[in-house]
Length: 279
Image 1: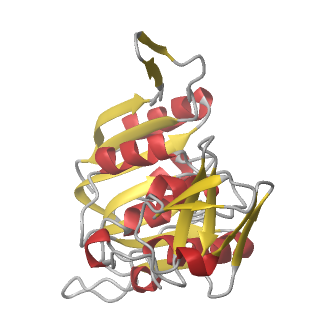
Image 2: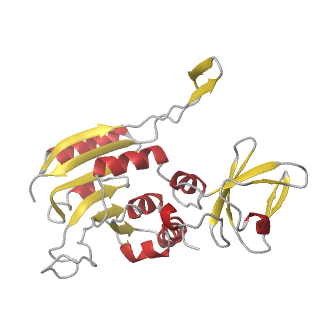
Image 3: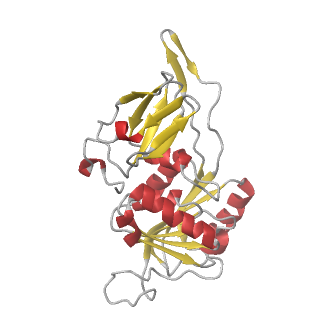
């Protein structure tokens, strides 16, 4: 079963779909349900047949009495638990990228490099079409597999992964339906999202490939990368240039005890965004 939208999903959990099993200590496990399958942990076994056709949020016990709750995973759950080759962008940054890039259904988005596909899946779930450049074939294949698992097989129709080096050149979307344009020629992206060590080498190719008013967002862990990117953007046809970072701090709330948690997800990367004002 594909990961369809929540509105189109049946109330009952189905064979073939992925569920999130959560134990009493809030540990999380992604499980793909199979008829006659078994979910094994150190605390015992839960039969897949017991989960299949149950309502989301149902509780199950192993033979040793350990309790699990079964729910459908969120996008964040998929991102943190999915198979990966490259380091994934954290959910806190994925959400910010969507807002900064203002990605919407029907848009053409350029992405490089695709890594494990977490960012691609996030973009595709908005209804946008994504053209991704990736140097490594194993990463490209893993991204395709993860996107299918997270966003469903239908998303692959809007996902074009090419084994190419974005430092050399950027071509327009080859499946673009823009009128009067041959594939890759005279076609424009609406947005560009760069998760690559030297994004300034890609930014110089974007004028002429990104429509006027289009947005570029780059994710980089190092401030020295940001400095070089900002210099390149400032010397080019870009405006509204800004760099931010997102910090995620949870709180302990139990009765009268209210305080910030001792640990937080602090710096993971800088997000630099800008708008193209002339091509």
